[in-house]
Length: 409
Ligand code: GDP
Image 1 (tube, rainbow, N blue to C red):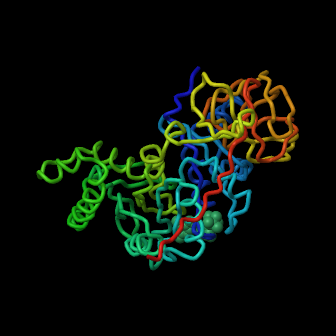
Image 2 (image 1 turned 135 degrees about the horizontal axis):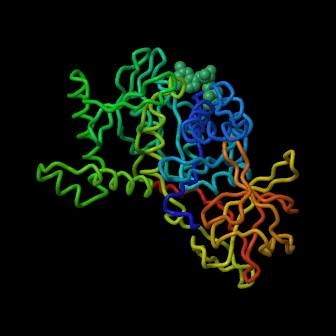
Image 3 (image 1 turned 90 degrees about the vertical axis):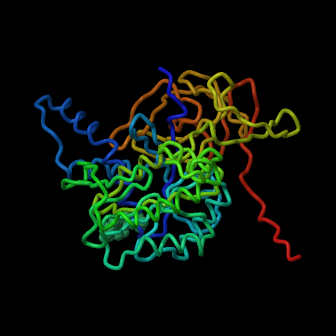
């Protein structure tokens, strides 16, 4: 049962405190795992009862704090990695950023870019983490996502461009206009689970055209094919726009800006589509290790299951079942029963219990795929240790990236 690595996303949510990171994380778990959770309960009591919303919330609370939680969204596997809210470059921040391949930068539609947004964005830039910006709280009085987009450009120096505009703002927020499909998207029902696509409301048509033009103009830089269509006045196909956005985002030359409200359940499913569409899969990110047997030569790791395993223990957790070590697998597969070596401690160990964390349960597995994040039980190690298949002796390199030298000439 092979996992399709190209459909895997390892992402973090970075935010200024109070911008809604926790609420957004909860909603993501809710939308991705809802069916799964209801199904589980049915199985347990056998009478077909379903969990009410509060029960679901409580269950989710248990693992929302876990270092990495796996969810499924439209045939994609998303590992949500907890990024510590520290404002400085501690080793803990470094490790959590190292295991991310992409991020959602959350901003408040009222507060906009604040000092801590500048810090977290600097961290993402320093570790070359491509990102989507999500302007949250569009339902709040004073919300102005258009102004926040300008701040992203001016204060953070990002090539940030709206790929959606809101339908209504403040207490009139109803949904979003998708500037790629040029369709309105409404999130109906108590929990926004009923998605309704419709024509763009008449009063927003001119704005939608204007912002779409801005988007296509900006991404034409990343695709010659798109630029040709655009210049010749031909209609630009939706997929061509998506591919160009993805290319620009992965190259860190573009930041797609999405809008909504986590609290009012508006826009989250579209944001998850954005994660699948625009953030990288593990094969699209370069990772390196030092070969300790060959003068610490730098080796590029290969995200495939044929090469010997290289994994990084990035977080230790004392849980009710003993010490849990979260690992990101960078190369090869990691299998139960394998013998691995902790290359710092020079200790060999056998992979015992191997698990994956979901929002409401812990699943025992026999194998982790390259690129994936899993947790091991009972491994004596320190955070930051590298585990390798016994034929190699690598250490994951430090991510320290020197500050750019600014020329005054
Ligand atoms: P965090 O500090 O970034 O994790 O933010 P929280 O998720 O804890 O949210 C901070 C406060 O903002 C809480 O009172 C939330 O209920 C509220 N909040 C979060 N998202 C939204 C939103 O989309 N709209 C509004 N109006 N409030 C929100």
